[in-house]
Image (cartoon, rainbow, N blue to C red; front, side, top):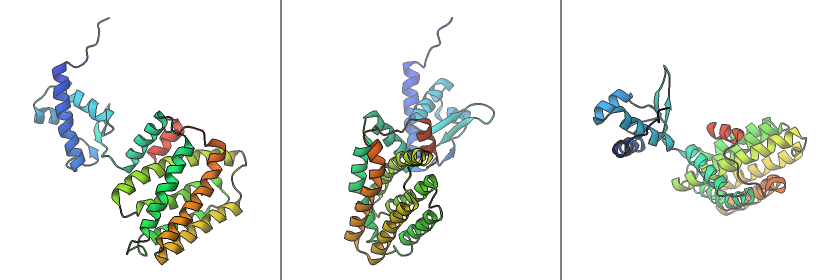
Length: 264
């Protein structure tokens, strides 16, 4: 059997150079989400052979910036980095480092209330974050009694608070952490609901009351109170997950977790 040879060192260097240029274009928005120019067009533009270009695409695909599809509708498709890709990468890193759910939960209890409090300083909060949070509460209210649906709806409240935090870096970092936690909590909810251990409707209403108290404090612009209520609420809701699963390592690689990340 003839041994299949990989790219030469020269082809690797050329591929790295092309990948660096395409990467810059993606990050600058020159190449938006969607199909990358066809390979023959790229090869002509860069004046390179097929193996060098394929090496560049391999590098970019490994970084998650593109997906290469084969077949009649094949080609390379661009995926500019965003918070969901950051969440997935963070989730894999947490799992790879053996970080446990209790550790992740503690960090979120520290950071999420700060984001919530920052929303209280927004001058436009009555036309932005408050209506979004009120809509989330209404959505959660409509599915009280259905554990799986309630968890999904109730978690959106937390995502919204972070999404409207004025600081962009906080939004990206904390939103990624919160998304990773939400996927862990959803896995707990599915099991608890199937086994009849999900919190009763009365407890679900109590969680929504905490959401309403946060909104009331936001309307008043009371950042300190927002942070206090949010911290207490997180501690209470996280405890239900941490009691059975606090010592478990964050899961980002199971089929269920990967489907959840793709749906972000």
